[in-house]
Image 1: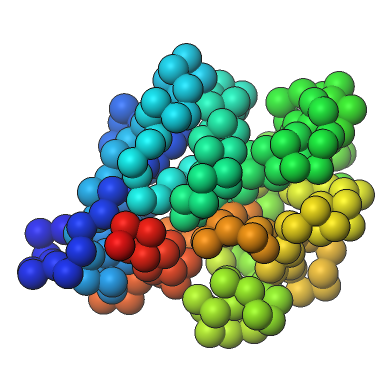
Image 2: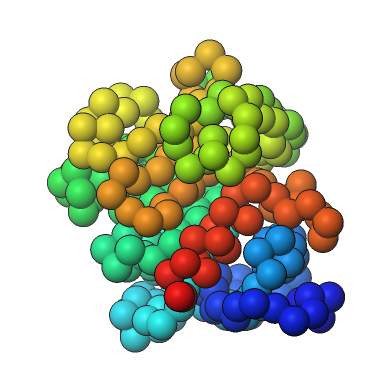
Length: 253
């Protein structure tokens, strides 16, 4: 953030992940936050926090005082419950939240357990026997044996829902963002989630895959299945990151 002279604000953002000790693991995330700070004339102080540490010490102890919480992408079961706890903390305390890829999937799990009331809800990636697989394997992935480039990969178009924070940030009804995953929101639960206040803010073009979720009664809670950080630039902040930092500034004030 040395490129930003005379910032109007200074805020703190917690990035909760399993690789928090390795700065390069979230390099694109940190740079996108920097770019969003420039766009908002704001000094962004980033604090990486290990999700496993949250499991040991609790979200309230480690996340109190931050102006925003971001949960990035990743793979594997380690640290998942810490991410879920961080998201619950952000949701309940009205702290601006941005979830990316696995961060969105953890947000779905948290909402299922603590708002919808689906005890034991999980992703079938981490618990194959869960009674509520709110995140599940894409249909076209179920017969895949060879991994690698067979996942949902690269640029995909999405259609945004009018009146949502995502649509407001992008200023467009259709966007294209980069993906890298095999698991998705389970549409079996879609109506049930919407009845409890979850907003489907974006889908793929035929409406069959949920790409963006938001919460109705929250200052700024947005989670996406894709990786918006990869399209951010110092001179053109990625819209969702810019909106997230803008909301964090409002909270700080």
